Length: 450
Image (cartoon, rainbow, N blue to C red; front, side, top):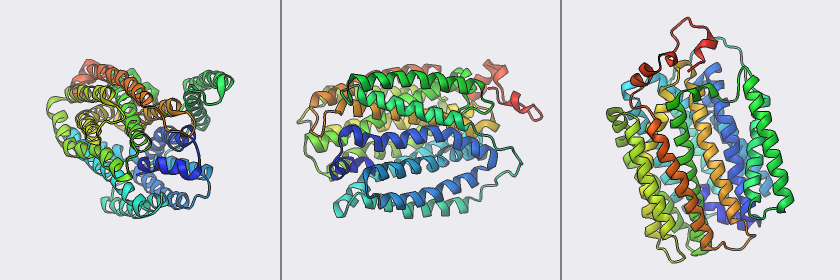
């Protein structure tokens, strides 16, 4: 919903492209930091309880955001939404992992992906409709019935939370270092195209190196690091998670770029923007269950590879066809094809990452995988803000063409990663017997190894 409202928010609060980009980037940074933490908290305190608490806090912050008096307050409340909303995704995926048989996990992920795509398709259309009848504040108030429905669904689920007593451990210094690292990364990307001058850019780069060193040292020495980095020793997990990062960079950057192009270059209405953005999710919703079944039948690798090639072809078409007079149907068609490729590949890659991890680390594995998804979005939003950062005027078409050519390179890299994703988890574990799930009775430290 919010993507459609970004141009209007920029005008109402009288901020530039780089500033409005922080509304997106701050949310993504908080999500990236909190995703693995949310998964760990669910592993330790119970998934449904953490899921429920996150939803309630998200509802309160949504109401606050609807009445934000200034842009900084809106950014702060939006960031809070991300911090508490991060409890939902990794714990929801972990609940699926624990309750669905392995032979049906791809199909289940396909249906879950379809549900997410349906909501994503409705988002731009609903956002455009709310903007037609009122202001952007209605978009946040719309979260009230949505969260109440989610809470009711969770109550009907009656998920049997384990009641084990576990010591609560989180690496808060590591999380703060990670957040500072992502903020500095976003600042550097925003500064590349003149946002503050050479001095600001140099300071940002220096801070990026220092914070990277601090964060890496903390992750190396912490007994409970922000993310379960040891999972990346498994080639398939690393490849599947890398694919998720790169494809989300492509998808999210596209979804953020198109509204600015349609409304600020072509002068199109909110309604047209909503219809164009919705095409991606509508197609994805229809194809996602089929993609899930294909990943169960053919293995995880081939649906991921096929979908990645389709995404690459569509991004090439966007880069070649973007022009001041390009028709909306052409953009909608390209986004629809991207949605088709995402539906085939994204569920297979995400399922591959989660199923290859030990069962007791399902929350951490899902959280780390989801963190990388948001990291891709952060980089994409930063690239967009940096490229379009030319003051308050409308950007030139050539800048949009440059963005899509960058996305072509990212889509090509994503295609390459699919070659290293396993087909069937049983084959992957037979090929690496030291990486099997630890049987009951194994010490916790040994069980953490992939």
